[in-house]
Length: 364
Image (cartoon, helix red, strand yellow):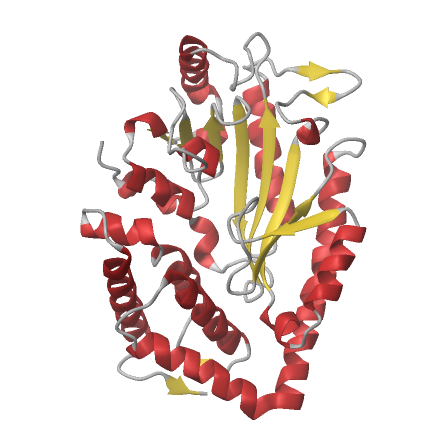
């Protein structure tokens, strides 16, 4: 099939809008519930027929689930590698569901449902991975939407549940609430002031964990961190969300303070560094993915510090995702070599920045 992105409500990425609280620091908030349906073997042990029947049950339930109204249903096992990679780059599917975690093998009946409100991965590690994203720092909003979806879908599909252990999941670390709450946060100030190690150690001491832009197994690039709860058993969903919210609020305050320190103690050095990043993005003819990520991080910090006018955080969020390799290949209509992708990435970034700021960015 050819992936028609216009079928995805809001492109599947309304969280890029930079409309939530502290959007210059927090890109998105996400709630994910792991659920299994009683009467089926867990996905890893299920046969093709079982997975197909499960997907059919979920599709049949759609008219009765308001938060999945108008949902696009995309079958991973009917897509090309580039299309699956693109959905992963938009945070709509995991590596496992997209078949990107090993030999590029996709399970039969692996699918994702995408609506304005929320989404569901079907036949991933668990039968269902319900998720909701919100722009900026809005864990409460994401939690309300995910809980609504969980309640509505759970009233139709019988979840596997144990009175002592809670929701039963393939991985024991998800048993209990089955919930993973996370925020995607940009912390260049703490990195540049060399305070980041202390902050990350503090997170772990408080039962939280951190990963890179794409969660488990991904490296931290461009000072983007995904912070999430580490435990799911023994505490309620509300307690886990409240704990993460309180800690992230503190991290946002520390990042804001670190940015003030940078301007106070090394103003011209920081300004020079960030304007050089912007200049490179405006004029580079070839941009490797990691370099683009680091440069966009610098420009995002410059916009947050109000050093560059006429450039929105939304545009930078969009560049962060849409300049990745599968998006470039999809736009080109073919697989790109690494050098071709680097050329296409530089051209795309130059065009987007020129469209927003004109021939030359204004100095604030």
